[in-house]
Length: 287
Image (cartoon, rainbow, N blue to C red):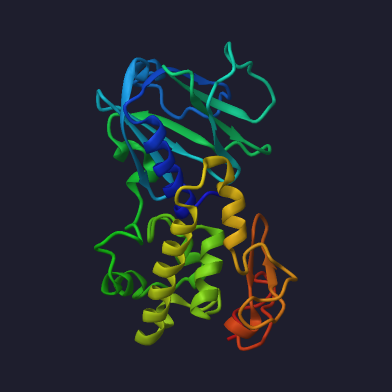
């Protein structure tokens, strides 16, 4: 799933390629992709793009008349830039193409979604706050006003495990499965540690890991073309998606805990005192 760093890079890429250009056509291909109907998609046709913003994991294209084309790429969605779009309208079918946006220059982009779980979502709204997922977002962890005191206040009284708390978009916007693993590895903390149990020193360490991990990932992604962002993300991950490989910090074997629809990766030596975590469905935290 694209998370804050990749969506931030896509925002920068689209700012460079879209702002000042006119949208001549928006073509939904998958029935499931469009989540709003008023105003209709045709309302942005003929409008210039005036800005691109990010809200958590949401991309927001603003047009000259104040409309916002907001996209959430979900788990298996992606944006593919085309220097020259194919001639003729795309054919609806069983392929991954979900929506196409064409510019007056002949350039544009396709939104695609792999797999059978169609969760990619596109909204056309007058205010991004009309999108339910945007409205419930917590603070952005890279915002200038997101200081350690604010972070500590968010975690105070939070009875969930750190892994779940970091991924909660209503608590902190933009962190998903991959970067929560990376943040916890950098902070040397178990994913099952309770958020409310953190000492002030641990809160400081987690805050620093949160900011540095995301900042470094954004910097790695900056200037990378949209088509190469997935590979760039994978290359920068230390533990996520690296089950069975040696930890780059201590050399221990990266281990995994599986759930029904996802998994987490961690280093026992760095994060759990050398003890492997049992399956979450069978055991509580091994501190």
